[in-house]
Length: 277
Image (cartoon, rainbow, N blue to C red; front, top):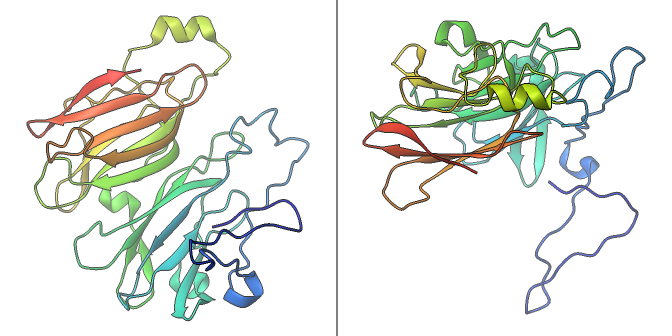
């Protein structure tokens, strides 16, 4: 995805003078998606701190045809799913697929095979509206026929926090995908005194969560697994990788405002906080 703010740009070339990237217009691809955000008198950056944080994008092959498809989340409009038809042509199948979403202010989106049936499902994080309503996360289960069924409550992934993003990986090495849910804090970031006093206390409403996949439902194992969680954690991004080359997944969490970033390491199949920098 390329963003630009002027009428001219330069495309890099390799050592042989060949173009490394080519910019394709929405008219060429059939992907006209724009995440438009409109300031309103009663809903703007002054009373909603995440107003300009943007949405999310997930790329994956939802119908196993060898072509990657695109799902965009939107803050103030419907989310959209584009099916890759080949030759850089995409078709908007949002309505027929049933994945537009019904909640407010969608943020991060992840494609992962939640139920281990060979098809990618779509998990959408929602941060809610100005009064904090309508922010339950949504899970679109792939039916295998280019349609999806919403099942967040059934699977225990119906978080009501100010979710920013989710990462799915096998933390307990049992062959299925578990979920690390990145959340924004419920507390006001301008309360420095409160921040200093409460840092280190487990979050109740907010805070990052580790959810274990138990086959037919996800179980919250945040506290017992040693995950650092706090109401004043303002999660912006999460990445999972093997940082210490021990063949076990580690988690790096970036935070906003006063909270520091976290690095969590998996030790003996149990997550432990390695450091908070």
